[in-house]
Length: 385
Image 1 (cartoon, rainbow, N blue to C red):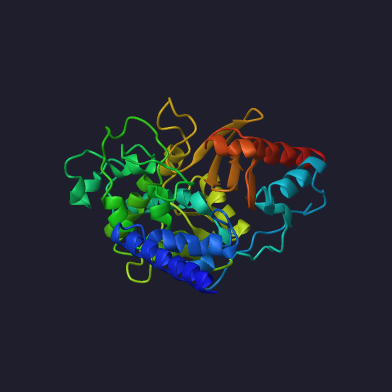
Image 2 (image 1 turned 60 degrees about the vertical axis):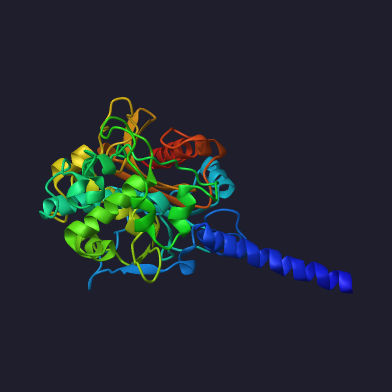
C-alpha cells in the first residue's frame, strides 16, 4: 500500500513538474492540444472540433438564398467506386452543383446539410477573398502594397500583401502537422497568434517562389483586420456571407477570449452548400446576382499560377488539371474540398474525415481522392446527360 501511494505521489509530482516546465518554456499550448485532441479520443485534428475553441460568429443576413434543386436532383445514385471512396475516406458530405443548382447531395456519419464542420485550410481561399474585397473597398492599395505599411516590424523587407496571398513571403516557416513542438501546432493551439506570427522572421527573398505557409495567410488576415478596422468575421459577414445569401451563421475560430484574433489560415465551421458559394463567386468572375462583390481582375489573377515553377497555386486557390479539364479549388486538411470547373458550370464539394493515403505525401498534386471524386462525378453526370 505504501509503495502504491509512493508511485501515485511521484506521478502527481512528475505531472505538476511537466506542466510548470511547459509554462516556463512557453510550451503551455501543448496542454490545450492534449485536451482538445487526445482527451476527446482523437489522434489528430478533427472536423467537428469547434466546440473546443473560442469562436466568432459569421452572421447570415436577414434573408437567405438556398441553392435551388436541379430538375434531375438526386435521380442518379453514387457509382460503386464513389460509394467505396466515401466509406473508406470518411466522407460526411458530397454535393454536386450543376448549372447553379444542386444536382446531387448525400450526407454520412450522422452529418446533414445543416451540420457545421471545419474548413481547415479552405479558409485560406476565403481570407484571400477578403484581401480582394479590402482592395476593392480602398482599405488596401493593391497587391503590391508593402506589409510594413501595417506592421513596421517588417520595415527591413519588401514583402507585399500579394506575397502573403500567394505564399511567397520568404517567411521562416515549416509546415508540419505532426510535430507538437512545431510552429504549426503553436499556431493552432496557442493563445496569442499575433505574438507567434510576429516572432517569425522573413529570411528569404519575397515574391520569387511559392512555399506553402499557414504563417503567410495568418499574417495576411492580421493585415486585413488592421487595414479595415474590423474583425475578419464581421468583414466576411457584410462582404460575402450576407450578400451571397448564406443559409446559416458560421463560426471562425479565435486564439482566445482576450486577443480574439481569428485563425485566418484555417478553421471556419460551416456546411457544404454555404462553402460552395465561394466556388460560384469565383466561377462567375466575382459577380453574384448581378452585383460585383469582388473585382473580376482580382478573381482572374487568383485562379492563375503566379509562378510558372508552381503551376499548382495562384492567390489563395489551388489549381489542378484532371481528366483534361482545368479546376480551381479550395483545399483543407483531411480532405475538405470545393472543386470548380467553370466551363462545365460545375462545383463539387466534399467534406470528411480523411484523404486518400497518397494525399499525405504533399499538397497540390492530383491525389487519388481528388481524381476519384472528379472522375466519378463525371461518370454520374454522363449517365444522365
